Image (cartoon, one colour):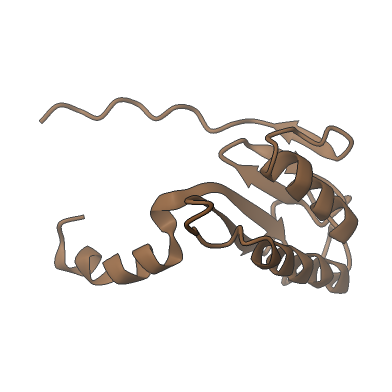
Length: 136
């Protein structure tokens, strides 16, 4: 990150808490061509996820909680059934039927306690450990 372009982004990166991200939640929402669920359901799920992470103070690092949880809208996560689909990284857990009541359970059990919510999990494939950095 030594380039001038990257340096210009430093204040934004720091203000968002990107170095403190603990988990990143991807939600299939607001699709161009709804397949896994009605578009309205996906937007209801997205608005709930966004609101709850903010209410719980999980969306930005704080003095009491130095890490944070990021969320991103995904047009389609390619499962195309039993949606909305929610993906939790780096754990690599894929959840089905991610409507508000299920999202709340995922937040409380998975995000806060590290427990996979088996009733809604459809797949698990954690990110591999990164390869060692090459010696310079």
